[in-house]
Amino acid sequence: MTTAKDLFIIAMDLEHSVGQGDLSLALAGAELIDLIGAGAVAVDGDRIVPGGPPTLDDRLMGQAAAGLTRQAPYERIEDWLWRRGRDLSAAYQAGLEEQGELKPQRSGRLSFGSERVEPVDSPARRRAADRWKEKEPVLAALASVVGIDDERSDDEDDLDDEAVTTVVAAVHDAVMELEAVRQRRTIENAAFANLWRGP
Image (cartoon, rainbow, N blue to C red; front, side):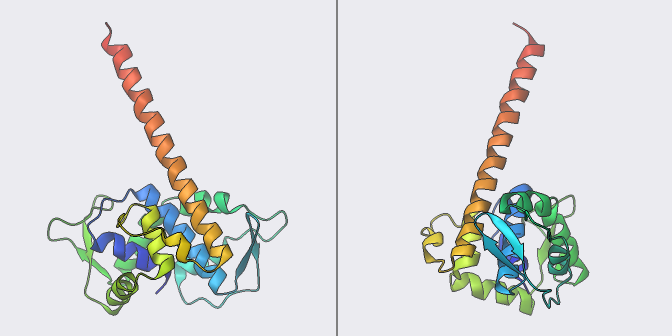
């Protein structure tokens, strides 16, 4: 399992309201952090520098590695998050359903898309729960960025890798930017509705 899959399972398990866009950005960040850990990429400033071909046994991580920009100037982290993150939470849901890690929801669980699903009791779910219980710094930091378990301390302080800290900060900035876009649309829609309503 990967950090992204663990994050997806935690988001569903905790029945916390997480926007698909926010979660997709965090999943893209989790993939990038795992690629750093696998030696597939390095971070140079705000750029993603590809390394050697990684050995990955995960289909979605393989897609992430295959999508890296391999020519200078390399892709900025922020651009990667937006490009790779597009509909990524739906891709993870579909992948986990194919693997039998998700089942149709009985009631009261988080809804992703039109079909409600929940994690099955599996080794993958227990592994994600163990990482969460141990407050594993990377998982905790990414979860915090999307608003899961806000009472935790600032987990970015616990990250001992500069590249990982850079990625988590970029995910945070992207989520804030997405929220600003949502608020702007809400204001514009309200103004438009008032215009048609008239005096």
